[in-house]
Length: 117
Image (cartoon, rainbow, N blue to C red; front, side, top):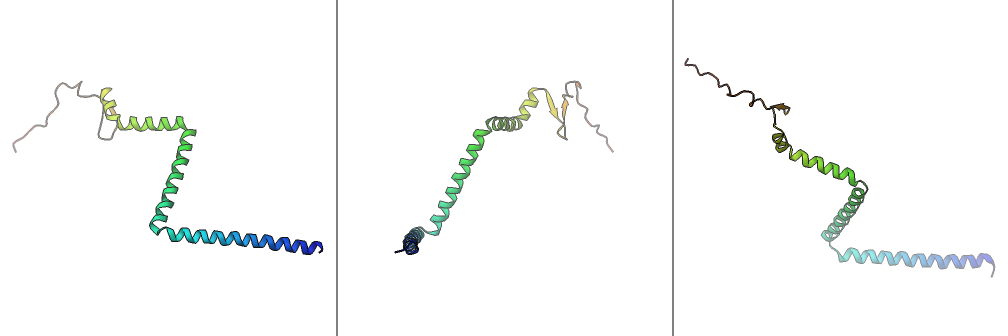
């Protein structure tokens, strides 16, 4: 037996082993698909995607902990802005600008005059 015949026999054995692996994979996929309903497969895929997204967000949050803390503090201050403004004695006008408390300097508010007409 020469080298070419040995190579051919080895290639056939490798081909047959590869074919057996592919057929086993196809059988496993068929069994997996037939065992789960469409709803179960979709739910499984969505759950896996959500867990992967959560893991990625968690890893990013670990890397940027200072930025995340600053962002959360800014959001907290934004929601608590009205009590903070009131505690500082400031008020907001109609456009949302902060102005000094004008009612303290004006002892009595001006009421519109009523006229009989």
